[in-house]
Length: 309
Image 1: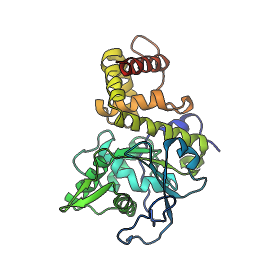
Image 2: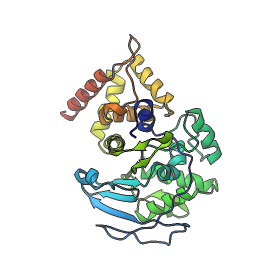
Image 3: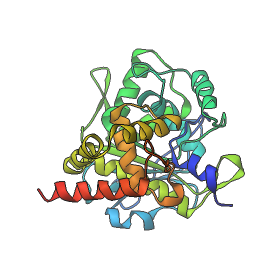
Image 4: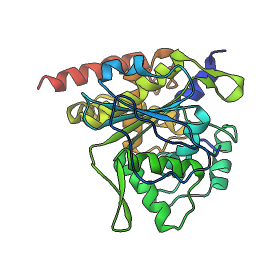
């Protein structure tokens, strides 16, 4: 059964995950093998590492529950992870999301999984809640692992698997006893595989496509400075204070950090890159409300104008 209504909206945002456990091995396909240290994981599943252009990505997504890694050949720095399921994606990323994006969570330390569980319940997520999709620069992910190292925080099985994957994929490395990004221009998107989701629902092809489109919007914001500058100009010059306040209020209500850094990026990804059925920012009538359709047109006009300069 496909997700509808409020449940679709809940999947469209990066809800926290509390499940644990993902184990992986590597098998290359259409790419050089990913060789390095032996995985220190109890159970293994095969992973394919594929190189292809962005135009072929959607067609290359697995139709089953497998972990597949994509290096996007015509978008230097873009990497896409297709996780086997929401559960296994969440097992790798819940504390990364909490550290870097979530409202009322510390930015200078990694919290325990118990704190994550209590926090998730505040936003109505299931204790086994799941991330819909993720987007992080390799610098941000390295920061998570470095914070955990400094705190002597034991990684979960899922986090350890993620660390191993990213080292073998040459996105992060341990250098002089500290975790660092290999390149500040690398950017990782993750999306879930098809199959069961919370509430007895299912991630189907349209939902997965919507998640991918949203996350690719974050890549555009990260990689195209002209585009990103236009989004910031739109936020500060084209929207009025009440509109900015309402958008921030809605995103904060979903659990996003209300800082401008997060809000502007999420705003553009929802307005321009998220299909309408999965759009969680809603119209609010009145003088102090927002009209998302008008905002979308204004943002598109701002981007076109700034691109022509």
